[in-house]
Length: 184
Image (tube, rainbow, N blue to C red):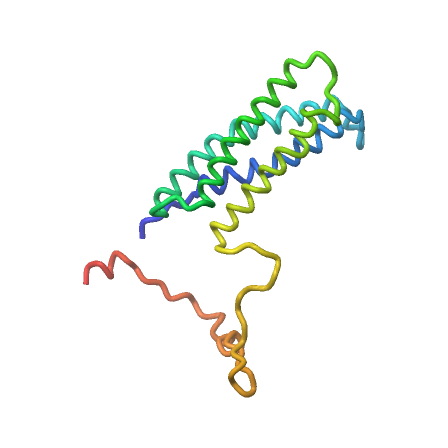
């Protein structure tokens, strides 16, 4: 069966998602001059630059692999895919502007500034929205409720289909080799 063992988009986006809150926390600890277990503001600054740099470097390939994988799996661009594309480009622009502003700052950055709001709130909000749409695309639904499965209430007593098939849950999966099926 022809498949790709690595899903580059999924692998790359997880790093971007992890770096946004890391950059936010590093910024807060750096500007607050807070030390934790011997880790001081200088280390938070390095971690902030690393996190923002990682987002800047990984967001573009994440976007490109998302476009590539989308084009292989879907026939059109639904609104959720367009939203993800716009948000991805927005995140790249935001992070590059933040890095330029940090680099060229003549004064120490402050938490209550546009830069603080962008790093702490903006990046995390955009990453949250990207995650929301990504999960909506891959899982088909989004929510905290239970799954859509309901037992059949028309039976007396009600029939739980999952209980009926529980005995077979240990069976090996039945696989179809598409290549052999095609030859028939």
